[in-house]
Image 1 (cartoon, rainbow, N blue to C red):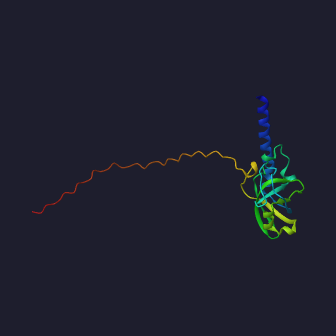
Image 2 (cartoon, helix red, strand yellow):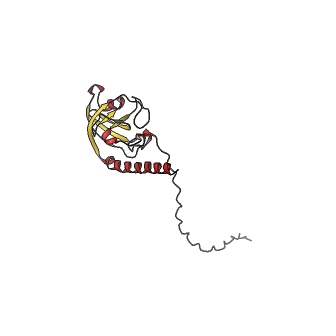
Image 3 (tube, rainbow, N blue to C red):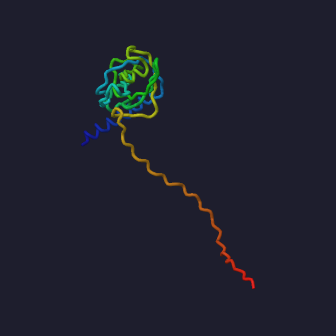
Length: 173
C-alpha cells in the first residue's frame, strides 16, 4: 500500500514538473526542418495513419518521460508554416532523428506546406492555444464547473398600495 502510494506520488510530481518544464516552450516560435514519415503507433500511445494531420516532435523537445503517453506534448496542436502554405497538426509521436525545432509530419500534412518530392523543407511553427495533454489527442474528462450563485439585488421597497377607487356609473335621470 505504501509502495503504491509512493509510486503514484512520484508519477504525479513528474507530471507536474514535466508540465512546468514544457510551459515556456508553449509560447515560442520555432524554426527547423520539416520532413514526413510513415505514421503508425506513436510515442503517445495512439495509432494514427498517413491521412491524418499529425506530426512527431523532435526528441530533444519531446524529452524522455518514463511513460511517453503522459508527455505534456501529446495531443497538443501546432501551426506549421512552410514554403507552400501552412497546416495545423496534432503531436502524436517523438522523432528520434530530428533536431531541436524539427517536425516529422504525416504525408497529408506535409503536402499542405510543400510537395512530397521536396522531402525536406524549412519550416517555422508554434503551439496553438489549448490542446491535448496526454493520451495522444485523447481529452481527459474535466469536472463540470459548479454553478455560482447569482448575486442578489436588493429589492426596491414598495410603497403600500392605495385602495383602488371603484368607478361609479353615473345615472342620468
